[in-house]
Amino acid sequence: MPYKYLSEGVGAIAELTSPQKRGDLRTPMTELYALSGTPGVGKSSVARSLARIRKGGRSRAPALHIREVGELPGSAPLTGSRSPASGRTTVEVDLARASRAIRAWAEDGSKDLGLIVGHLSHLLPIPRVLLLRCAPDELSRRLRRSGVREPWLSQNVEAERVDLVLLEALRLGRTVYELDTTRHAPAEVARWVLSVLAGKVPPRQGTVDWLSSFPPSAKGAARPRPGTEGRRSGFKGGRPPGPR
Image 1 (cartoon, rainbow, N blue to C red):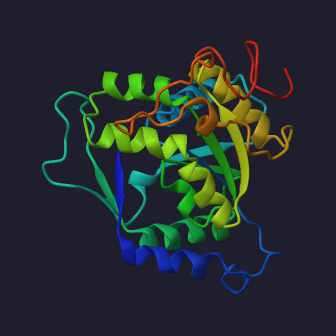
Image 2 (cartoon, rainbow, N blue to C red):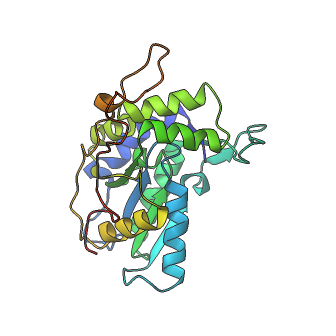
C-alpha cells in the first residue's frame, strides 16, 4: 500500500523516541517490530504468510499481532488515488498521531509481540526494524506487474538502489535486521521473520550492495552491471539465514 506522510510529523518522531518520553521501563511493554522496505519488496505478502502460519498453528512463537501503517490513527486514503491497474489506494499518514498510537500500544503491555507493516514503519518509534530488500531489476518488474507507473516506478527503484530506507532507519538509531528477498518466496521470508522475533537471528545490515551491481544508466534507471545479472547479496540456497 503506498503512503504519503505529513512533514509536521517528523519532528514528533525524535521527541517520542527520546528516553525521557518512554515512561517507566519496569512497566510491562509490548515488544514492537517494524517490517519495512521500499514498496514492492514483499512486505504485505510476507505479512499474509505470517498470518497463515499463525492461524495454522505452525509456530510456537508468542502471540503476534500484525497491523498495517495505514490502519493506525492519523491515516486516511487520499481521494481519487485508487489505481485501476493495481486496486491500491495511496494513504496519507500523520506520523505524529501514528507515533502516539504506537507509543500507547507499547506501553499497554497487553500484547506479546507487535509487528507494524509498511514502508514508513521504520520512521515510527519502533526500535527494531526488519528491513526487506530486493534487487532493483526485480523490483522494477514487480512494480510494473502491480500497475505502478512513472515517475513513481523509477523513484522507488532508485530509493532501493541507494539504500534509502536503511539509511533512514540507521539515522534514527534503529536496530536493523536486513534480508535480501529477491529469490525467496513470502513463506520463506515469513519463517525468517519468526526466527528474528524468537531471538534466533542477530541484527545485521549491509548485506546488499546495489550501487555496485546496478549503476544508473544514462537515463537514470538502474541497470545490472555486465556479469552481475545473476549475482545477489544476502542469503544463499533455499532458506533465509537462521535456524532451520
